[in-house]
Image (cartoon, rainbow, N blue to C red; front, top):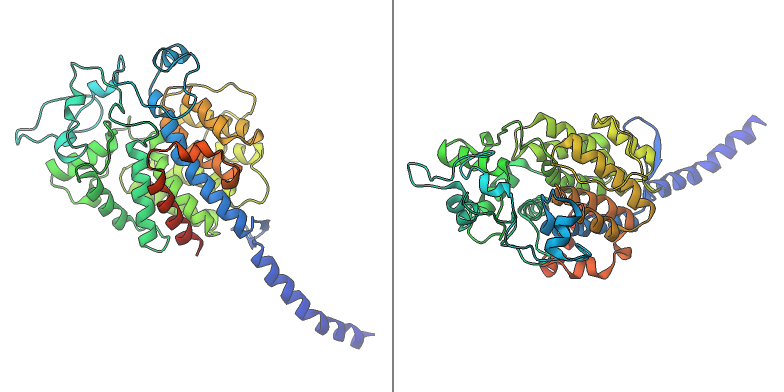
Length: 402
């Protein structure tokens, strides 16, 4: 009997090896905890990655006209009609109470509109070329007054710079390479059309130009306007790339945190990027749709007290992480249930507040969960740079999935 059992084991070995190979090809891999998890197959991975990227850019551009509107639906309807935002729209030129016109053109936060003693202005001369006049404190200018219908804001344009950098490095994030590409893009006239540049960018270039610091030492923090949701925009792109390659949580988290630190000096954001990247991984890799449990895990990792729910109303929030992320997780819970990326991004646009950068990261998750083939045609076709984005997304997908 023992001899028969021995021969049966020998005969079964080829079958076991074949099953193991089949499992790997289907995406059954070991997690960092040593257990196994069923991952989506390659076709689904690609659909989710493409859906995430288109959703990412759509979320930014749809919300751009109502960015930092804190007057509720009445303010949005006054500027964009009774139905508010129903698709891509060109922003109105003026915005009462705009903080743009209270902001420091040579550094972080609020402050001076004067040029330096060397007659240099970071905004206008070094970055955002020709846009200094819009920052004049005697005016009330929309943050994105110089953008067109469906055009992306600066942070999403930098995501394109990051994608190209990763493509040039075979799908990997290389901090120095990206930082050099970032500097070149920001200091090249007409590389983008946005009016506004956030505190982190103004501080970076003030350090580089006015204080003559080495670029690697230029990321900075005013401990108010840097540890914010816009700091998760670029890490989301790195996380999408690394997740699509089948990497584990630790590898993806390290890439996301390194991306955050390339332009900002923020332990808070590095930690938030690590936590957020785990949800990005699940949105891309996990065979089953995101669950409330997945969202609750993310909330705990982010240090949030509020448990995500699909039943809360969509809310307007400011840019600070403890305000913006709970609402983002609620909207993911709500709109993944309805499988409508477009509806979720329109709702976000009509919330106002800090909806642009929330729109990007929300769009990445909703787009991944909806899948590229299920996105409505108007989501892609209305984007100002659709043709260029098509090529850049194709190149990025090929690079990270090879």
